[in-house]
Each structure stands twice: as structure tokens, then as C-alpha cells.
Length: 227
Length: 86
Image 1 (cartoon, rainbow over the protein chains, first blue to last red):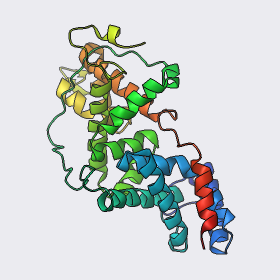
Image 2: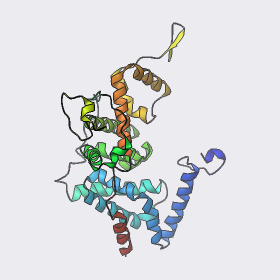
Image 3: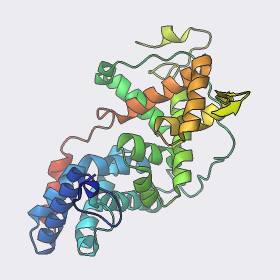
Image 4: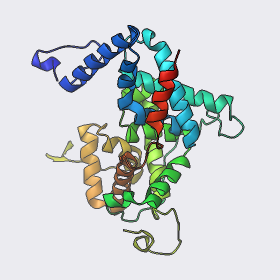
């Protein structure tokens, strides 16, 4: 920690030297944009394109809608940039806008087609009982080179309820901290942990019998799995 | 660990308690005492070890950058939109 080394201290969070450099760089870019340098805005958002796209798709599922929501969020961030005070990281602020934009898109345009986010207060109490106890050996990384494998993982993620999918994507895909997830989702840290726990175990149950999604009863698991 | 009959022993934990904490265990969001209890349980319980390994695999799978690929041309289209801003 830089603070511990007698460097810069931050009132909100302890930062590493790299994080501090990033925040300083972003603060300069924000200033340049506010002073009229539009190119600086693209430089500011460019490293987070994947982050915002993944956030949008965690809510809307459909790639085309996700792209639209992500891009609208970027335009909104541009208009609202003078109001960005640096109280959170720029990326968290941008993801929060994207998340709200995607939710709004679901509510406004396709409310009849999508699951209702507000109604998804699933019973998160009680214990989760795993379905599968089979030995699951480490998955070779090369397997993800196969389109079918990526699709199987995608489909399994998409089959989760929004409340689980969004927390899983924020934490495990985008690797945001629990604190960042609480800010973006507007829920407590305890809720983030509970939802993430359920999301991971649900996904495990969905993927455990075979990466292709088949659940072949009565067959040994290792015969079902392609590795 | 608690002291029992003059020696330190790890308090046993049930499978249900282990499942409840598996995600926090992977995120290192549990107390050292709970970690110790869970690790003692994993050594003796093949089912819970399978659940742990599977959950760890899932975290690795979804966290792989190849799972969520951006649509082709996303950056180009975004840049174009930004250039069109009044």
C-alpha cells in the first residue's frame, strides 16, 4: 500500500501505487474532457468497453440490446461527466450508469419479454443443497477455445435469474470487489455474498453433469464430460 | 480450535455449514477459525471436496475472458457515436 509507504493517502480507500496512478490519469482525462477535449473521453472509457458490455448483458441477455444499452450508457456518462466527483472509481461510476441504463431498457422497451427484475425477490433464505457430488477435475483451459463450450457456459449463466446473473458477472467475470458490487447493485455486502454464493452453486449444478449441458441419468459423469 | 482435555482440537462442522460458506471460503471472506474447520472437514469429506472443486472450476470458467466476447465492431461503433455528439 502506498499509504503505508509514506505515500499518498486516500480518504475513501487504501490504494496501491498502480491504482493511484490510474486514478490520477483518469482525473486528468476527466478534466481534459470537461475542458472540451472529446478525444480524451474515448481514451477514458476505452479500457472499460468489455466491462460495460458484460454489465449490460448481465441484465438484458441479448447481445444487440446489451450493445445498445452499453453505448447509451457511455453517451450518458459523457453528458454527466462534469458531475463526476471522483467519490468512487471512474469504472464503478461507469458500470453503475450502464447497469441502470440496462435495467431501464428492460423495463421500458421489453418489459413483456423479459423477466421482471423487481419481482425477482427469490427465496434467498434457507440452505442450498448441491445436486452433484461427482468428482469434477480441473477444466483444461483449451476447452474454452471451443465455441460450444463458451456457448454452454453462456447458456448456463443466462439461465440464472437476473439477481444471480448480475452479481456473478460483476464479481466473477469483471472481478469487482464486494464493495463495488454493493455500490452498483444498491444492496448490502451480505446480500452480495448470499446471491453470489447461490449463483455459483446453481451454475455448478447446471454445468457439473457435462459442459454440453446434457444431464444423462445413470451414466458415470466422466463419460458425459468431454475432458 | 478449542482446548479440550488439555489439547487443542478443531470443532467439527457439518456438510450444510460447509456448503453455506463455500463461496466465502473461495473469496477468503471467512475467519481463520472457520477456514481451519472447513479444511479439516474437506480432508474427511469427499462430497464437500467435490462441491468445492466444482465451485472453484465454475469461478475459473466464468472469469475466463473468452466466455464474454465483445461483439465485433463494438469499439468502432462506439467511437462513431461519440464523434457524432453535438
